Amino acid sequence: MSKLIQLQKYILANDFQFSRLGLSTNQDDRKHAVLTLAGYCAAVVMAIGYIVYIAFDLYSNEESTLFFPILSSILFWTLGFWTILSGIKKMIVSSDTEFIFSLPIPLWQAKLFNVIKLLILYLLIAATAIFVGILLHMFIIPDFWFVLLSSLLLVVILPLLVITTTFIISLTVKTLLNFLTIHSNVIEALLTIFLFLSPLLYITYSTSSLDYKDIFSISSPLYLFGIISNSTPEFGFFNSVSLLTITLVLVFITGYLFTKRHAFLAASYSTSSKRKARDSSTFSSNSLFKNLFSKELKLYLSSITYVSNTVLTPALLLMGSLAYLFNISSLLYDYTLELSFITMSSKYIFILFTTVCILLTTTTSSSLSFEGQSIWILLTSPLSLMELAKAKMALNVLLFVPGLACAILVYTQNFSSSLLDSLLFISFTLTSLLLISMLGFFVNLKFPNYNWSSEMEVIKQGKSTIITAIISSFLISITAILILLDFNFTFQLLLLVNVCIIIVLIYKLRESSLLME
Image (tube, rainbow, N blue to C red; front, side, top):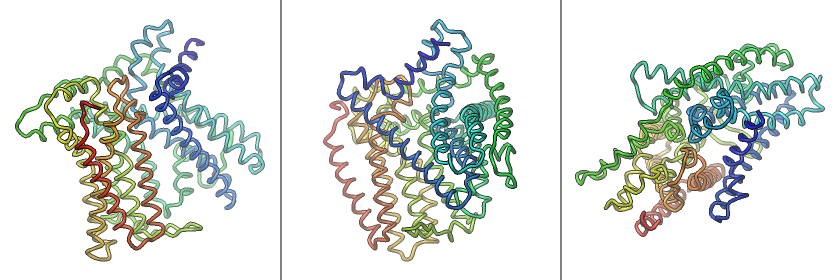
């Protein structure tokens, strides 16, 4: 067991860039490590800040008994969502699988190696969040030591519940699609995410308000599994024991599949289609754009990790716009966000929602790096950089077309005050989509990584992905500030900024060369 722990420590240090920061002599590698760690630290600080806000908000409203149900709900849905986006396949097979099975460790440890690594990480996250919660409630909650013991159980239960639940849902979806002979990573990713989030979505739809307390308290695993109810919302030791019993059943099922049916799981999550998609990169002089786009689409669809990390915001924009279009809830048009310093009407909420969906993710920030070692085919071909850029940007644009079309229809029918207002909204959203697509490609061109062993290295941890995310967050923040200030020329100003940046990027791309980069 000591060998397993030492190996896990080494791999986690490598995944979080501590090894690169401490051992690498290359300045670019060290800068990348610092940038990655800074992103993780910022996420931790924001998460702790949100926990503190929830604690004080509940305390001021004399609802502190809801704190641990709400915190367990947020941890469960966030970690589960992250697990699906990271790829369930990583728990079964990874780039280190052959190396792990060659080590002098028991076979069951080798089969569960990636699961144990994920469990350690989630234990640390859950322990940090619940420890902060305990400190904030040390002098508030009665029977503190009783709650402390319950919280320690919750630290163990939540990571196990997240891993087992997401794995069982993913395997069920994959088995069902294989039975129906449907082999589509897009359908698999969307269906897995939808099934996992369906209780949360249903509860959000059913609640009479959009208050986070109503949504997250009821969507807590403690409520979903019937451990606590509306009449008895207090969370205690015996609630944890009941939840632990349910969790152990799921752990037993998952452990059996991993130890006794590991070959079946590895075959189910095989990625042979990905290699085929990369190796079939041939081009014809006829309809060059069509051939390039077809190749890009096949490459994109070949990876469940690539799809699940980039298809969510287009799907969210489509589903959200359809919800507005069919008016599934009167709150969508009547709700007004009122805080101590701002008031935001439903119109501006919809504008901000559309902007966030468009700018938050883009396929282009890792599209060049995802070519991997097969980039030599593009390097030796007579393709111009602009031809390649058009095909890669077209994929990202295509993903957003259905949702953006519905969003434009919603705005023009329900929120627009004039024809000019409609035209400005349409121009702003279209240029924003073009901007983030072009920006992601340009950043990836400047910071490529073709020598990767795991898809996550380029899709979530790549330097170009991180830089693009920082820039998109800045653009979203600027848009939000202008909307909150209710500036009269918000659309005009944002449209001007988008057009200017696009012109600069086009000029830079025309001067750049894939071979030189």
